[in-house]
Image 1 (spheres, protein in one colour):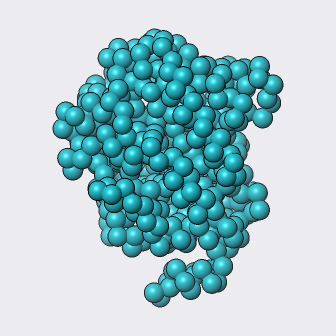
Image 2 (tube, helix red, strand yellow):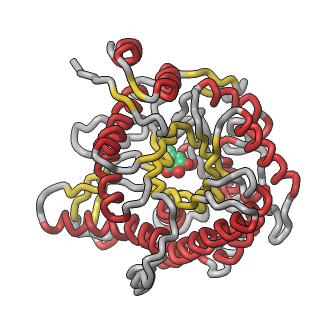
Image 3 (cartoon, protein in one colour):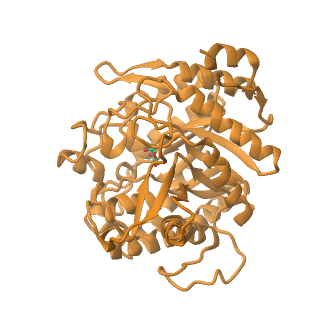
Length: 436
Ligand code: FCB
C-alpha cells in the first residue's frame, strides 16, 4: 500500500502548462518538421500539418487552461511564420501572437515565450541552420524583431529550447531534421546556439529597456537528464561524467556564464556576468550509463534501470531525479529555478496523477531546503505532435481526439487543476485521486 502525504506550495509559487508551436498549431508548411514528416520519418506515420489545429482554436484552448486554474503558460513562436522569407517579417503572424498573448493576459495567465523550439524556417534549414555561423546573426535579428513587436506584453523569455536535444537528435542520432550523424556539426551547432543565446539575451534586455521596462527575465530551457553509472567501476563513472559534460554541462556553462568550454573553445568565463536570469530546467527521466568497448558508441551505452517503472516510451519514472538535478544546478549557479517542462507519456492516464504528485513533492522538498524554485510548467496542456514519435505519444492533461479535435480533461488534469487552485495537495485530493 502506497502512502501519500499532503503538502503545500508557497503562495507565490506559479503553476502552469507548456506547449510548443509546431507541436500544436498545425497549418504551416514552411518549416523543417513539415518537410521531415512529408519525407516519411515519423515513426507512427502521422504528421504535424494539423496537429491540434491550435492556430484556429486559440480562444477555445485558453478556456481549457482556465479550467486548469493555471497562472502561467509557456508557449513558443513559430519562426517560419514570423519570418517566412529571410528578412521579411509577417505582420499578420505577429498580430496573431499578440492577440493570443493579450487574451491570455485578460484571463489572468502570464506567458513565458520561447523563441525557438526545435523547428526552423525552411530558408534557414537550407542554409545549414545552426551549423552555419550566420545563424547567430539571423536568430538575433529575428529575436529583436519579435521583442520590438511583443515586448510590451511579455517580460519572460526563453531564447532556445533544449539546444542539446535538438543537436543530439538532428546531428548525432540522425532521427530529427536534418537527419545527420556528424559529431563535428554537433559541436559547431552547439557553439552557434550558445552564441545566439548570449546575443539574444542581450538584445531582449536592451529592446525592453528601450521600451521602458526593467522587469525582463531571459533564460534558456535545458533538457537535463540524470546520468548514473551502472556500477561503481571507474570506467562506468568516467563515461557517465562524459555524457553529462558533453550533452549538458558545456551547454549550461555557455548559456549561463557565456563560456565556451572545451571542445567548443577554451573560454574562461572571463567576467562574472550571467547570461541567464533563471535556470530553465526540462526534466523527464534518468539514464544508467555503462562503459562498453565500442568506439562507435563513444564507449558508453545508456540503459534503463533494471525493474524501474517506465512510461509509454520506456523512460524511467524517477521523481527524485528532479530533486537531484535542481539541487546540483542551484549549488552550481544559485539562480532562481523554473521547471520549464516536466511530464510523462501515458496514453491510458494510468500513472500521470501520481507522476505529478511525486514530482511536485520533490519541488516542495527543494523549496523547504532553500532552493529557489519559482514555477512549474507541466508538459503538456493537451496531447500533441511528439516529434519523431508522432501523434500517438500522449503527454496531455487533456486527451485529444484527432478526428474531431475534441479535447477531454483527463483524471490527471482534474488533479492538476485542483493542485493549482489549492497550491498543494490535501487529504481530500489524496483520497479522490491517488488511493485505489
Ligand atoms: C522535450 C521537448 C518537448 C516535448 C517533451 C516530451 O524534450 O522540449 O517539446 O517533446 O520533451
